[in-house]
Length: 113
Image (cartoon, rainbow, N blue to C red; front, side, top):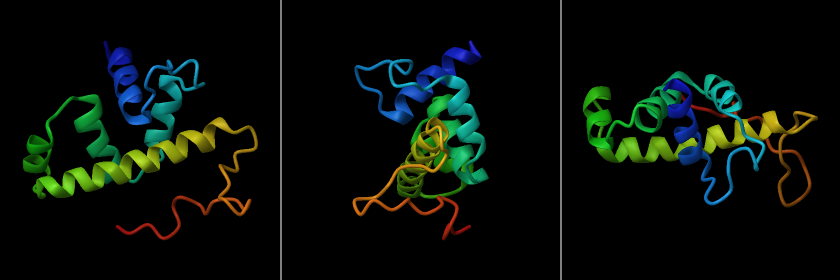
């Protein structure tokens, strides 16, 4: 049961579409490791909404934040998780490059608490 929840959440978060996670080289274990790398507030929100299936409204009430803040923070958390997944998938661990060919900044840099 736990495994299936992570597979479902991984599909939702990574936007797999028609391709399976396996076809994209993304395992539930990879998603769990990348999730563990996120700041606690992003990890909690992704777990509540994507893994546990909680509604935005219920998550907002539980976390005592506005529903719009849930949507905005969830979008940032999904982006951060996708970046960490991509970093973990690359053999050199250096992440993707921007349009100028230089490595992307560390996802932890400039993060605000």
